[in-house]
Image 1: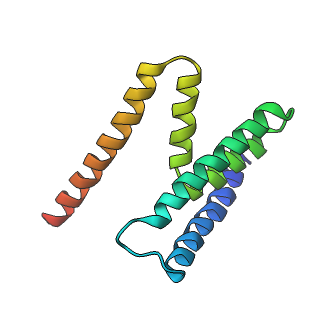
Image 2: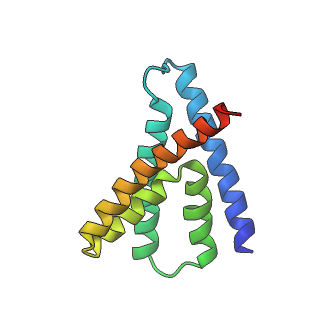
Image 3: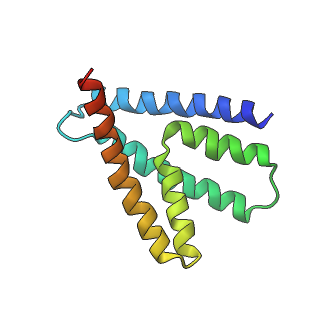
Length: 124
């Protein structure tokens, strides 16, 4: 059942991401700066904080609702929100070095992996 909830949430989150990008371009965003992705990442991180905080402080909710909103809806909207949540949780637990390593490696290796994938496909 959890897989279905994640699937539905991810579909809704993906549609919200697409709609955000479409609206940004329609109302004047340019390709000079990736405003849509930036907005989605920051908004998604804020919403993930609200959702995680709600579940942590407002009583007992089923794991189904938690995965629908976090893994599904927010994961479909932006995985950056999960990255942000995991980084903050590491910091809150006092794992400062691991948090810095996780954040730094995620950004640097993620960009490097994308560049490698583009390079490989351009060679074919």
